[in-house]
Image (spheres, rainbow, N blue to C red):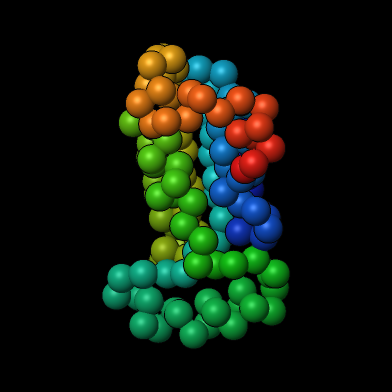
Length: 121
């Protein structure tokens, strides 16, 4: 599954990411490529221009950091910054083993009907 240059414009991006992850089969990949605020030494010079450019060319939120949420979903995660850190590409592979049924019970979610839990998100 690929999100290319629109992830930071999605209104409920965390819910979309969770649904996309659930839709993947084990071994499938989820890739997000989008703009980000630059960091590091170049940020001092590029940050004002980047904010101006993002404000005038996109409606999205450049402060969204989906790589943190995606990295939390699996162990097989990679991220690469491009163009002086103003773009990123992150990739996660869904593990081939799903959590055991007892894992949900340890978090106190087993008593909640799964249909309700999805609707509540």
